[in-house]
Amino acid sequence: MNLNKAFKELYPYKEEKRVMSINYNNRFKSLNSNVKYDNHKIVFSLSKDWLEYSEELRKGLVQSLMVKIHPYEYEETMAIDLYKKFISNLNRYAKRDKTDPILEEAFKSINKEYFEDLMEQPNLVWGKKAFYKLGHYEHQTDTVLISEIFKEEKELLDYILFHELLHKKHGIKFSKTGRHMHHTKAFRDEEKKFKDKNIEKKLKWFLRKHKLKNAFGF
Ligand SMILES: [Zn+2]
Image 1: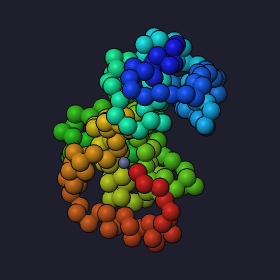
Image 2: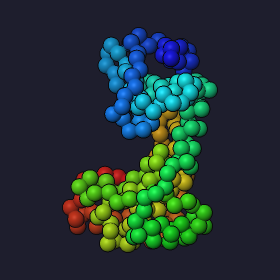
Image 3: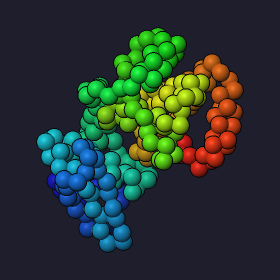
Image 4: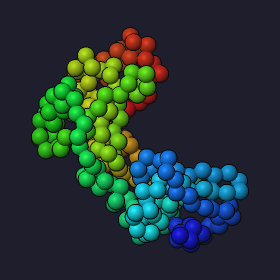
C-alpha cells in the first residue's frame, strides 16, 4: 500500500513529512488496529486478520487512522467510505453465543418495552467489579457487558442495559473529523424515554454509597 498516496487522497493540500509504515501483528485481537507516532515516524499496526480483506478496505482503515492523528476535515475517499460501511455492519454477522439468565431476562423486558421486541439479542456478559466500568457495548462482537455491581440492582441494571442497547441501535457515527461519536443528540433524546425519571440520581447515590465515584462512564 502506498501510504503517501493514501494520505494525499485524504488531504490534497497537506504534507506529511514523517516516515509512515505498516506492520501486521499476531498479538492483536481480530480486526484490531492502532497508530503510534512521534516527530519522525508514524506506524500503523493492524492485526494479521486484516490481510484476508481487500487492499481497498485496508486502505480505508489506514486512512481512518490517519484521520485520528490529523483531526481536521478530510476528503471522503472511496476507501474510507467502504471501511465505515464495513465496520457499521460487522455486528450483524457476529457470533452470538454468550448469555446469562439475569441479563437475558432484563434484555427481554427492555426489548419489549423500548424496542418493540425488534432487537436481536446481543451477546450478554458480566464485567468484573474490579474494572469499575459500568457497562460497555462492543460493536465488532455485538456484545453488551454490564458490571457485576448491578447483579442485584434490577432498576439500575435495566437502565445501564438500556443505554448499551441504544449503542447497538444507533451504531457507529462519525464526526466530520472522523472521530467516533458515542452519545449523539439523537442518542441522548432516546435515552430520555427511560421510564424512571429519577434513575440518574439513583445511579449517583448507588455509586456514592459503594464508593465507586471513580467508575468509568458507560
Ligand atoms: Zn455510552
